[in-house]
Length: 405
Ligand code: ADP
Ligand code: ASP
Ligand code: MG
Image (cartoon, rainbow, N blue to C red; front, side, top):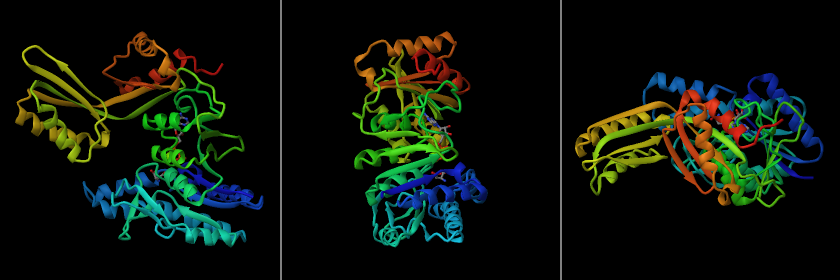
């Protein structure tokens, strides 16, 4: 007998029929004698609808109240699943984030889990209940409802699995595992049997939204095996595990894309000490995360400086830089939201040369212009025009020998 945490994403609970299917899966695991804790997302599209409603009320909705609103999506699905299970004579109980005692910091909209007090969940499991917990939400020490950032129910699931010392955390989604590239845009993407925590951390941070990055961090820290698999088939999915579990080592093991990107350029910035600090300090103070930065030196003691931010932060960052440009005497500021980041990833890259040049040549052969480049030991990322994203992913996937036959 095992303790199994099962998380179902938005498409898996998109309507009542699908929630009934979830009930069947959960019951199957329970009837095999396992203890089951279920974490649910909101129905697909609901979180976006709720966000839209909030924006209809105010351009900058109050962050505390926004989290109260967004948490209702997961409250709905959790209540419905528990109701269905009970109507089938299975002992079940739903818990909201605060009832499951998922304690977070105060950061509304992007809160971090700091503690999970498992007494209530353990008591319910001890009495052979199926515990259904609303994902994506917690509460701060003052009892305010918080949410964990988009895709956050993955993190709820892995964090709860860690706190309960579960045997496995199963993530049920609309694809049947983790692929070498997003299978929805690259039809030659290959399903992986296993992937290491570190590679998955890289893929998640570079745009593969199949797992929220923080969930992979929890899984690695507490050594929780995560099984990503389909809600709609019985097939085995992909195990996210420690590195030495007999995995194949490719130079490049995956290609990712991220359309959540925007860039800002300051033209003819005086090339003096302290100027970069003046440009980036107010951006950091606004809570915006800057990703790539590039500075080109011109003749005449001036530089051009370009950096990227998440699209949601674009307008705020642009407004800040328009003010700063006047203060420091830069000639112009402009921005662009129609860009994307494509990356090739692989731990095997550490001791191989020629990966970057192959990536650039592959994009050049398709006439795709590279706007910005950044590299680390195990990945290379290029910013390109958004309209070329799908093409770029496909040609890179082929060029690095990742295609299925
Ligand atoms: P859920 O609602 O179940 O949490 P998500 O939409 O958050 O599902 O994540 C699943 C999606 O992740 C897939 O539909 C797929 O388009 C996308 N995805 C991106 N990169 C990958 C990848 N490398 N492997 C599998 N899926 C990926
Ligand atoms: N419902 C939330 C979202 O859409 C959380 C999740 O699905 O993981 O982002
Ligand atoms: Mg998700």
